[in-house]
Amino acid sequence: MDHPDVFVLGNLAQDEDKEDKFFKVEEAEALARFFEFRPVQGTRKFAVITEGHRINTVVANKWLKLLEEPQGTSTIFLLNPRGGQLLP
Image (tube, rainbow, N blue to C red):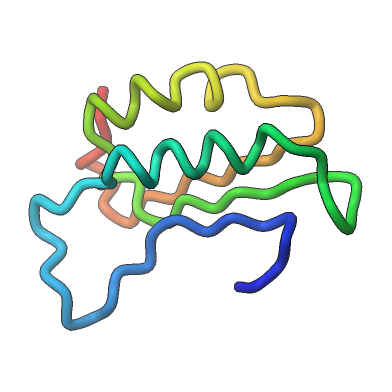
C-alpha cells in the first residue's frame, strides 16, 4: 500500500518465522509519528495493524494513548489472526 494517509504495519512474508516475533520499538514510534501530521490527500488518516498478536508490552505502552484516544482524524484497525494471543 503506497498512500500518504495509510500506514500498514504487519504482513510478514510467508516464509518468515512468525513465532515470538514482536513489533520493534522503531515500528511503534513510526506509527506514532505518522499520526502527528494532518492527512495529505483526504480528511482522515488510517493505520492497519495486521498482526495484533505481535504487540508486546513495550510496544503496547508506546501505543497506549494512541489506541485509547485516537485523534479525530485517525482511524486505526487492529487485526489479530490469532485471537487467543493478544495481550490482556
